[in-house]
Image (cartoon, rainbow, N blue to C red):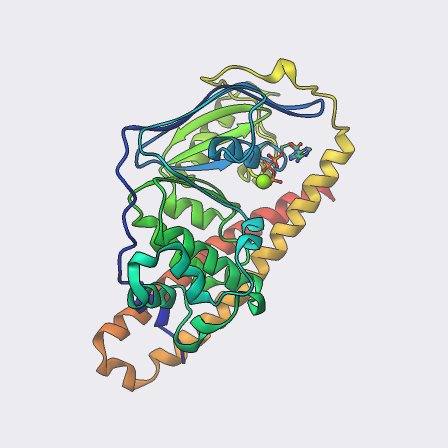
Length: 359
Ligand SMILES: Nc1ncnc2c1ncn2[C@@H]1O[C@H](COP(=O)(O)OP(=O)(O)OP(=O)(O)O)[C@@H](O)[C@H]1O
Ligand SMILES: [Mg+2]
């Protein structure tokens, strides 16, 4: 029985990144096009110390592009990128998993990243990322996608940069690993800009939501719930005919097109070919995205329900209560799992309604 394992393992602090000035990173007048697809035509984006910014918006809105421009892994076509003093950047995306060295073991891969931490500390950190005992001696080459993701994330956190740029970091992670990542990032003292389709994850982590629609950025202070509430209010205030159409699909902004919102940054609409995407193709893409997310949500719900059954069994075993700390950890895990199931069920209903509206 492995219940409680992850709750116990994470009681350690990752090394703190070097402290930076208030201004961590900025893009000014940033331009980016792929061929004649102008994604950004002079956009401004600034990140301050300690902020945890979630980028949200419909598929293809330009979230990954913005993150890569900010991280400096994609060159700008125009404008500039500025980093604050002492700011190093770490960029994480799925394809970073290929940057791991197949011939190394899990422990060796981490040692290479942070030799100064020593084996004992690295083993503890790997334990938190659910590699315990002999698992640290596995070769990268034999790891599953989820295991590689955990190694890459651990590697990022043992040598943290002041600015972490993460594109869908919870992809491929099972529930236990998501929890580990959430907790590690929640206590991370640096600055984070991230993209996620996982609303629970966004809500736990974000201090600011930046919505991207048609090359325009809109900042909302607060977490995802606050952002949704603000959007719902805005939709209610909109003049008739201008609203988002009401219904639940409108409350799921990563998959539907919200109305254009006034933006404090330069308006790039005029430079986007608004008729470039035939409407039918756009709808088909949206339906595909909805279906895909619905499937993910269902998988997660099933996994959580299985986990809750395990936890239920563990809590029914009197032996658990001889270890008060472990009993508390298991109880806390059950609470989080239940909370997450509730979230996912809610999202599932919204997704289903949005899909039904298309069919
Ligand atoms: N390497 C590329 N070459 C050509 N076009 C690209 C490239 N990368 C992105 N695009 C286009 O730029 C636009 C923005 O893409 P981007 O990947 O930034 O969107 P996104 O918001 O991250 O979407 P998703 O939610 O699907 O990940 C899209 O129209 C996409 O097709
Ligand atoms: Mg993307």
